[in-house]
Length: 394
Image (cartoon, rainbow, N blue to C red):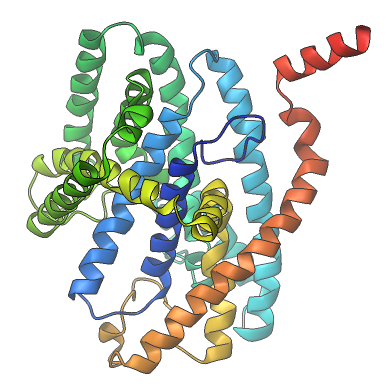
């Protein structure tokens, strides 16, 4: 369902598998070395960034239709944002200690990277040129940008959802046109804003698409598609998705510079999302037939947010143990560093990725115990509390 955990809701296994597969791809994108602009690199980048859009779409899809605006705000803050930010603070503390012991960090370095992590380089670089864009600790915690984007997007999503979803197709279509009318000039004329504000209209469109798909009962409709047509649709959608990426690659759409084709980049992102979602759903439906794989990916899909903020820094430890280069700053590839990509480095980075994700599992389980102690009572839904109270009264 939504990216946070909600044990009182009935979950849709296919959607959990889609998100689980996505978080693995994002981890591979961050960790596994490959030749720059090679076939593997293009596939990983195009799918990895495609899944960012899917997460927002699914967040809109799984939002409760009957929830009020402030009730939705409260649920998201108490059920997702506060636990995740507390986890991030603890991660900064333990990660900072590791960097002091093994990467020559000082207390000042930790505070610097913590500030850049939460304020983002778009702000800190304007405070002082000495701030720069953060160090290695920051870059291993930087997926927190996604949380900020989700926060700002949901701030606008819930009032719009209450106002427009279920109120007719014309109003919904006019809203999309309005959001695109806002996004295009923001993309063309604004520099990257703090917390990726310049891309919020696009993420908002993704969430509104999700809400509309739920209104159309899209998941149950997709479940009814026969295997052979589903296979054909998957192949066609993936081919079109990759084609759009190769023609107008815009992997960095999370800031205000999408690519090099002007306003068309804004529309390319929407088209890629509409292509990749049904393809991934049909793949997930096929995976449900493989019990252990479906169970593992489903678990990952239910814990995507924690896997997102954990996987980089946990894998760094394995990178140190295996003595492979760390991804420093903008050097996502070895070529700019003058290091040749070899089977040994690729294999070790893949091993580090797998070990890192596996190590995240017990950490998340332990954190869930602590989270329940800290937030469990507040996460209980009003209807559940009311039912329990009535049961006690009788």
